[in-house]
Length: 330
Image (tube, rainbow, N blue to C red; front, top):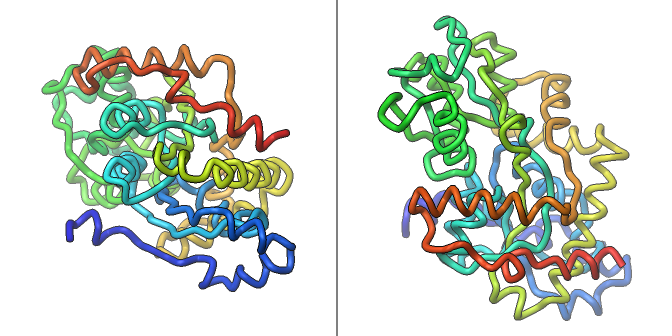
């Protein structure tokens, strides 16, 4: 068994929560028999928290769906699990989707959220660094291979006149970066919420730039082509649950924040509820297919092709599968 496989947490959520009784009470027993169990991948940073909320909300059970969950530190690891066919669905940003399609034929069933406001480049406050250009010669913690990692290297650092080698890239999971900053083993980090908010609240780091001005960072729910072919009706029911989740993010933010806050406190993170609630508002949950998505993905693919990270530009009509959300929304 690989270290990656050992790190996966697996939970038969329907059995654990007694959701079978709930499903029967909602009259979906017959429907659920026809639906497939979803092996759900998600990252434990803020990008994955809408998916975590989906699994804790009861909406999957409402729509007759059983699931197993697979948690990892970042979305590029979920993508790798999907390429290996260990997971059926998972969220990650555009660059990881393009790479996942190139490596394993993965496709998107919806654009789920924008997270550009959650990702930041931060430097240790004691160093007095104010700009990305000042990271020359510094140690920068980066989740190498992740969407944020790729965007930092290919767009943000490059735009500041820094190429690889001008700074020391320290490979690190996002959930380990705040401790590295506190220990002063790195000078800066490319990180996401809630870790940025934690570092800021503790007075150890200041923001150089957030990603939103470079990239709104749409995050997609991706699926393996085999799962879609096997049970398209499960995909539609699954997206109906996501539409319910989006309503909660819009209309009941306290319920959402309370649910997700409990996840981080259970992991030992100390952060005030108010700071956390502010951090979660940086995630914009809005399942849909915006008109500018294809041009955006074309740009991301061109960047990855130029960097020789993919073999060819994909056919977007085959990668961005818009029909399932249209059915779910009908």
